[in-house]
Amino acid sequence: MSKLTYKVSYYVLYAIFAAIIIVLALFFYGGEMATPIVPEMQNPAYTDALLYLVYGLLGFTVLATVLAFVAQFVAALKDNPVAALKSLLGAILLVLVLVVAWAMGSSEPLEIQGYDGTENRDEFWLKITDMFIYSLYFLIGANIVAMVFSGIKKRFS
Image 1 (tube, rainbow, N blue to C red):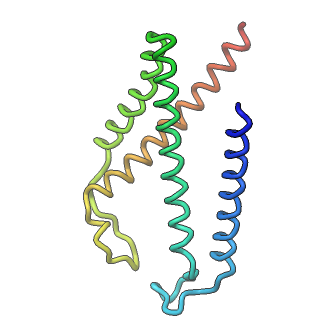
Image 2: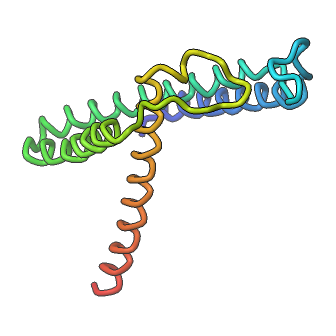
Image 3: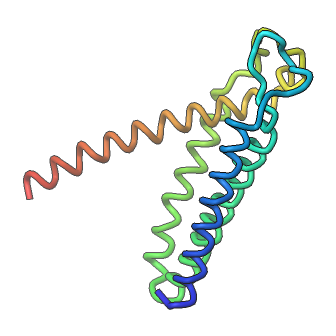
């Protein structure tokens, strides 16, 4: 890894850590909302900041993952096209899992106490949350199976 890349990643990492610590401190110690949404519940004043930070970090992570995958695929395509095409298998399987999980998702509205928003009635958001949950279950199961078979393979080699 080049020295410039190391320095940039080093400073970006610590800038992200600082942002996380600041937002978490605001969330936990920044007080309560002046007019709470649900009077019986605690409503930290900086909940929006915490949610926006999480959205930003998730978007940054997805973008970095996709860019790294494309860069690695293009580099591998130049060196060994067959191996590069085999590396697409994992991405294709992930898309297949997401499509199957989407199809399994329910569009039935949830009964949520104290919530009268419209997102609970939107079929897209209901199915996408189910898709994330089902794909998470699948990926956790695949990791467990991979760990077991890796241990068995290591034991017999």
